[in-house]
Length: 633
Image (cartoon, rainbow, N blue to C red):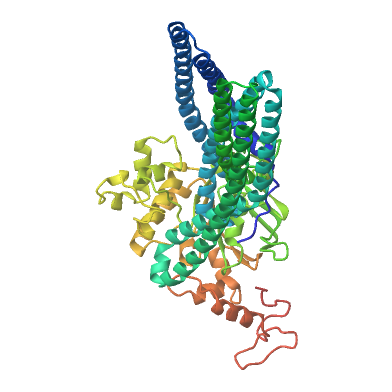
């Protein structure tokens, strides 16, 4: 698994990704922020009436008149609290809908970008980790918006409102409160920036743990059959212990931060008490002002104390969102060119012109390969493992970009057409059948989404999938498991063939389409494939050579190069040809790979001997006519 170099992500990149989803709900957002703002402002006003209430009581001389004034003040207080209740409910109602819809939109945006990445991207990432990133991206906004709307905005209003009110009563007290608040916020900023690194580590550890967990569960059969439970347990324990250490360190740092904040709050409370009592003794402050100060300082310190957790949550949200935004800022390896046009397939002619490709720069898989496939021609690609057969198919589908050369379909360079139109015109039956944990009907219909039920069932019948579908309790509505685990290998292959039949593309690729079928099923399927291939340009990858005898042409590959080409009979006539050797060595219809193929290559590359062990001086077989050397393979 190669390490992906992600682009550097800044806060504005994350906010831009959030706004991409939020702009469609901007009026809800405005109403939500306005309602929270009204609540914050009214909360500043209410303590003024409490000040007035106590000042009236202290200065009372006429109880009847005083009682009337107090009742008026109480009515105002009740009215203001009712206003707080009303706008708080409005804000809550809007917030529930705004955040729910936003989470769905952000999750969809992340999915839409993620799903278009190349195969190599997914090969280099844990599936579970990617799932975690998508979900945490949506949750990050939920947490971020919640803290900003319900904590940050009220705090800013509280600071501003308290400052303005105290300025008119005691300017010095307003200055003291302002300086202390700035000190508190600055302290929060410093420790939060320090803690951010540890929050990111926690987020990365969570993703890694989820990825390994999902990977192990996905491969549970291998774990059981190879008795790897103990190994996987030890491996998972290492990851979870690392995750736990990262979490504990982050929590310890949070505890230290909270201890510092508690000390600052203790200082300001003591200081305000001291100054207010002194002012009262000097007749410079009333009991009502003392109540006002206590209300403000309790409200402000409560907001600031919560702000420590807010900052922590904001940075955790940043760390969670950053992982997904990195992916959303990572350019696609394979994408349409700016002037890409839809592929127009009229005849289905395919040309590989001097194609070279390597997954790594230092190791090429294909070397200057040229193959021309005529319209409607059926061509088989054969050769030992590693010859480049599957790579050719991946390049035709633009799963990878060429290192060198070009591929044309009906004279159109596939690098200049849209990916969607290219893949719509190519039907594929892969060796490893790809099924979703959905119903059989949905899996077959994936070949052509708009197909009606009758067309789906016809495709199932042509692929002989109906034979096993009829025996299932829910028939074609049966869920196949992940990834098709409830079906046998042959049944999965038939579903894949049904999908290709339904798609009915002008170009068809069969990557060992009958590899998972028994002899009876293969015979039945072959008729369906013959019907499917009629009138199409077909490329067949085969290890079982008996399945390609009727192909128009067979291209033999070795080490990324074309070494032979011709019909079955023509290639078989070449006694020392690679195809002839492979055909001779077939056991049960399969090419022997690995050590046996290396021995074959060594034998064919060694000086040729006659039946008596004689070797020609030039390395030619003594029985080979002059000027006809053995083929290079």
